[in-house]
Length: 110
Image (cartoon, rainbow, N blue to C red; front, side, top):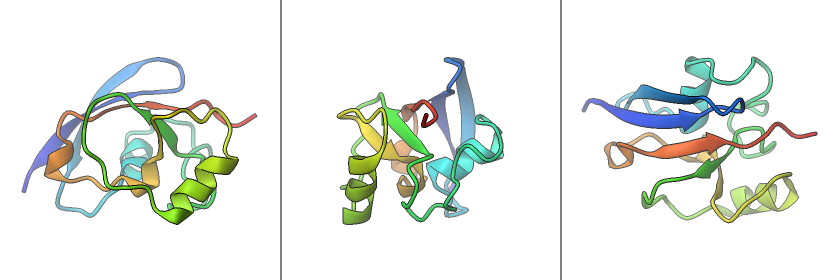
């Protein structure tokens, strides 16, 4: 397995092209945190349990992602700034199929 390329637009509108390992069982939220693309304490507050929506992002590319779980659906139903392409980054696991994935971090909750 090898690294894949991701394009992540941060909350300031800046695009970052990053490498993400496919062999470490990471999710998108953890990749964002590891590259410090959001201020500490503003993303992944619940630790990746689909319980806070702080890692909400908008999927900009046409990648086929796994269906949303009931927990993810419920959390997005209560979140701010939700769009049709909203997903929780903690629920998007990094696999080779996601090479070239483009996402934009949703604004921080008010």
